Length: 111
Length: 117
Image (tube, rainbow over all chains, first blue to last red; front, side, top):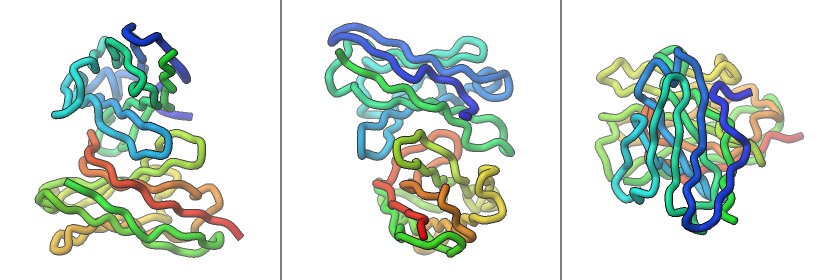
């Protein structure tokens, strides 16, 4: 059982927006602004898409955005494209002695 | 910036294996390094991480591997290691190394560890 809760699946049509949630507690998501999101295509390594809740690494399209409210973080993908179809994982810092807190992953399908 | 894992293999339960993560393109000593794994068809699971030497080079581990797995680093060679002892069937997974301690980028391509008799 993962420490962070994500919906197992999400979907949307090309051009639409989709939001994936990531629910934790006040000890992780709610307690720190260190939520990150990862995209993983089948057979490939994960790729960092969002860090520190809202920041995008260089090269990540601005269609990807992050936010947080209380104990729930969210990843929004706007203007869905076929290549966005992938698994998405959230992660949160949870203190130095509780490392590696991840969500179970959400499979995003572009219809 | 690149990370390349190596050392994955087919091993019997109870045996040991050491994975290596060779880094290039950045100042290795300035970063914490983390290991994750992904069992077939499953999600990502944290294995452990090692802080940069400036922060003591200390380590943290997931409960599932604590006492069996050890992470170390050789800053002179830009390599992080994952020593895995007393391997179990449930340790079968692709093992990834990645840079960072609370957000992780980039990731290596992964190396497959299969534990089976």
